[in-house]
Image (cartoon, rainbow, N blue to C red; front, side):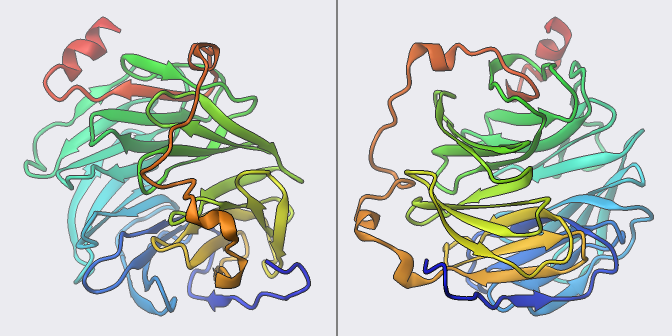
Length: 344
């Protein structure tokens, strides 16, 4: 990306308070979609390509900290400071279910097969709701010593990934803990399931999602709250944080290759679109900005996809054996979760 070119983003207005989470759906027969969470209590759904507003999910009575869409973009979920996670019909905007919690819900995620909803928050409990039996009590993993900041699914819904806002701690039966110097504020599983991208303080890290070894770690020019890896070629990533800018970096070298300015407050979330042609940023200023990634910026190395199904990442045993703070991985264990929670 030519540093001298000034990128002009699509600016999406509508939220009246800070935008704190963004989530792109996979590409569907109807295109792809972008959902946003805001402290104004009303998640919004948009056309992921144009940024055009489609609808607002109304029903929460507190700040919404997390939002997501299922694989088919037919349902949405949100986690809120009103002590609830809600399930929505993404076509009509209707509330389908409200899952009550005993404290603030900071994170939510649909399983890949769309049958389960995972939540976490200030209660320090991971809950797994069966959406085929929404009135049934959820399975719980309750031995996390810190409040949960992010949740995600790995390995075809067999593994749960979570990070804590506090220092240390474990969730469920630990498979691996990944070391970070500061609490992890953003965790993203790459589209092909190969990498986990994390932002913690002034560092962005990339982990092997299968062996959990640290692949790359780059120091950022400021404290960043979120980072996202380009999904198609895997050769670039973006990061945003307290300096209000969106930084674009080369994945292989860590060199900054672009910097987009436009927000008037700290950037809380950045995410690439499913095809990698654009990325969105959400800010304290209440706006979402969608930035185009110039096709001309792909270089010759793109023919060797860093984020594709080919190639292997070499990880040493020492990397895998690291003891970690604030970032946790646990087996979902569909039939033995209760036993694991009891034994842990």
